[in-house]
Amino acid sequence: MRSLNDDPFPSTPGKVKIDRTRTLTRLLYRCLASTSSLFLWVLFLIALTASYLSFHSFVDSGSRFFTASWGGIQWEKQVRTSSQIRRSGGMSVLVTGAAGFVGTHVSLALQKRGDGVVGLDNFNNYYDPSLKNARKSLLNRHGIFIIHGDLNDARLLSKLFDVVAFTHVMHLAAQAGVRYAMENPSSYVHSNIAGLVNLLEACKSANPQPSIVWASSSSVYGLNEKVPFSESDRTDQPASLYAATKKAGEEITHTYNHIYGLSITGLRFFTVYGPWGRPDMAYFSFTRNILQGKPITVYRGKNGVDLARDFTYIDDIVKGCLGSLDTSGKSTGTGGKKRGPAPYRIFNLGNTSPVTVPILVGILERSLKMKAKKNFVDMPGNGDVPFTHANINLARRELGYKPTTDLQTGLKKFVRWYLSYYGYNHGKTVN
Ligand SMILES: O=C(O)[C@H]1O[C@H](OP(=O)(O)OP(=O)(O)OC[C@H]2O[C@@H](n3ccc(=O)[nH]c3=O)[C@H](O)[C@@H]2O)[C@H](O)[C@@H](O)[C@H]1O
Image 1 (tube, helix red, strand yellow):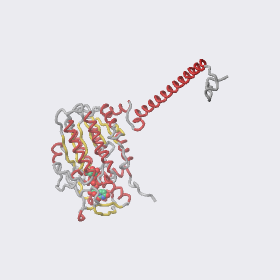
Image 2 (cartoon, helix red, strand yellow):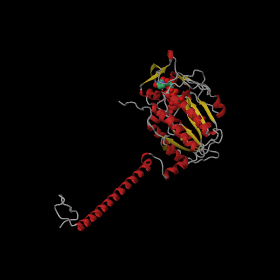
Image 3 (cartoon, helix red, strand yellow):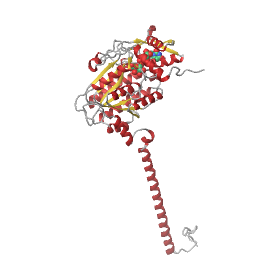
Image 4 (cartoon, helix red, strand yellow):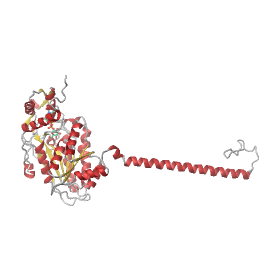
């Protein structure tokens, strides 16, 4: 018996007599059979495509849950709780760079006086992330929630402003360090330019718009030689890419103030130091090396002149930051549109008494009761400036800023913290 699949046609046409009716029926039958199998195939393919697309969209929409630690009901609850204001007339502040040196201290001070604080930090590995994690644990212990995320994540920022009507943003997240800019220039563009613009975009669209206080830098004075440095001095001669990105930040924030009515305060920090500080900075790395018996490199300027910095203690900087938040005035825009002029301010936050690097080393030697092995070398042309010196009259007048900690007192506090955190034998090889 021939099966339905048997070919009714001979390979050589004309050799058999064709039963036309039967053949036509068979043809029709076969046609129907192949159409239905084709139909089944099409159905199968549609189902396959649909399931692929829905899986893809699930992975895509859920990707932030796989790759980032934000989102979800529990997360929103933590953000809201952390942002709650606990004093009358208080503020709810988004602190970027909250696991950084200045960010940690400012967050704690805000929380202590009853303001709501939510932290954001990308925990990058510019320096030992374990120090950032330790700072985070400290903040968590004080009830401050820290989000692990990047300034460049527009969806995260927009979500944050949906969840909380922040009154203020304290923007401290940045790629810091003057000399590292030659090694990794794009990280400065990523954080200090692109990240800043992304944050400002989120702030401009937020309703209500927050007031913004952010960290500029003394480095914007660059090759300026007029001392002490005043806010009105020229800042168009940066000596490093770091300085150039901070200067660009001042121009960019001005634009957002002008177009969208965002209240902006830029703070030019002068070489901030203290407990929980940054391991890449000289006072920190010198301490580590002295304790480990390793040599330190001390740069010298032209003709062997000592370099000097207006080193500023962290507690004084924190007071300047809080004073800036308290006096920032409101942003005026809504729905991304300016409704009137908003404050645009820039302040020096320094100590007004520069100290040379060899004197800094001497103070550390006395605090640690150990001698440093010093190598003096000419300052390499890598972005350093010979000295900094702040005129703080404006901050004193407008913010009530008044630094009270001299370098000797501040370094003693730093050394005490360093020894309690790392111990005396930190990094020493035990024989
Ligand atoms: O105010 C700022 O806006 C900047 O301050 C800080 O920069 P700086 O003032 O350059 O601090 P820091 O590196 O501690 O060097 C201090 C001194 O030690 C000298 N120095 C440094 C390293 C070394 O190995 N040897 C040395 O002599 C060095 O030549 C200098 O004279 C921040 O890092 C920066 O992020 C930014 O915030």
